[in-house]
Length: 404
Image (cartoon, rainbow, N blue to C red; front, side, top):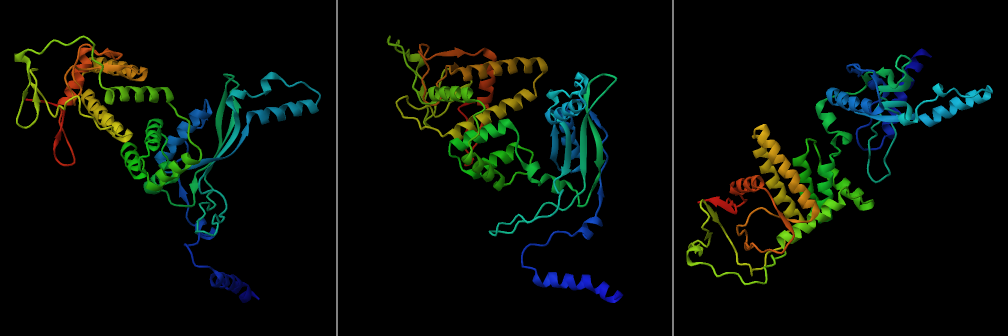
């Protein structure tokens, strides 16, 4: 009997392996999981003034220890207050005001568990095999709202913390976790939304997200994000700013300047520009050459939204690099000018930074377009940026204005 009792598990295991279907590697069983226990540092803070403060601390704790938690359950404050009122009602008493929790705290209790918490269950629908992420991990943090009778304030207290996982923890597994890879930067998401509206390829959007976040974003993350937006378009976070920027871009880029009806005085012979054999036009402004200045009658190519974004992004990056090296006072002045320029762009007005002829737009002191003349510091900063040549993919220098 003893021998047969010892052989039964082996027979069951053999029968299980014989009936197993081919597919991905099976999940760890409970014996394997119990033998792999990874301890993590305990929480060095257990009392918080609000739930937001706790979640900020939890995010930092996860990054430091390579853990990933998620909220499993929670009890609202309204539910807790309802139970308190019912208990006093059964006793035939009125509820003391001090017994009720402040509804501004929203949540009374909360359980935060490891993302591998729970029993394994199949997520496959028959199309493809999906391995369950739940492997009975016991790591968990429970919290409850309590009142500090010394100060009278309600605070979030950690009531228990199981600081052990049944799986390995590493920087690589943490950074590759879907929750950690998710892009949450509102500025990046707003730009991605604009590129998506402009029908930019997902591969190009992925390159932008990868270059502007510190997360290990994968192409499928971008595809999933765009697919979710196609099902449920996100609200536009800055509709007024985007429409104003579009109006400014359309006016500056496509609309030719309106010249006053009064005839212009004929140019003097000494002010005539000399055309070099290379096709570049030299002006009398000392120290500068305007390259590739086209005739105003030539139709200018309409840039794509992605092209406009890249052009403005590159200029902004160069300005940021210059301002990073400035003295504090100089930086403060230039920063104030940039804020003023942002207001002008949002208002839909056309800023006149310079009167030089750039890319076929002739200079005229009698332009009838609405606009503002920026101060000399902004013009100097813009000229400094334009004087810095950039190299294109073909190795050719791309700069509108360069020293002679």
